[in-house]
Length: 108
Ligand SMILES: [Zn+2]
Image 1 (cartoon, rainbow, N blue to C red):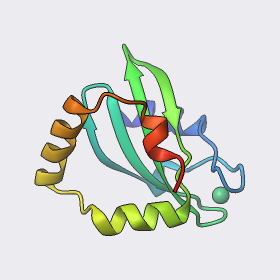
Image 2 (image 1 turned 90 degrees about the horizontal axis):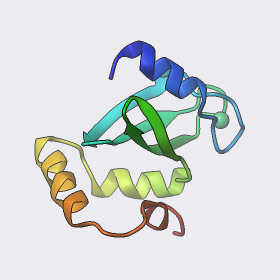
Image 3 (image 1 turned 45 degrees about the vertical axis):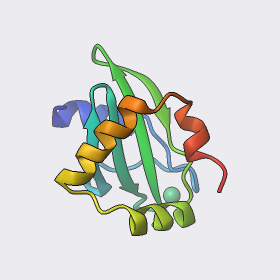
């Protein structure tokens, strides 16, 4: 993904907490698997951190999931440290995962 694309992408995504747009500087790519990209983002305005899952198809954004709360993010970040192994795990996980990602990311 090119920077320009990322900037355009995140200009469209608003912080779940305060409604301000995320800035590219606060965004970190956690990993990707084919069309699914995972990002962690922190809001410059309210400092809320969130996880963002984005499905990109043919250069278009098909789906954006941004409903992780800070508490959920903390739990996630404690259980997952992203490294090469984790990206491989994610790869395997997504290969076998057959459900709706929104289910995984909502509810505590
Ligand atoms: Zn915010």
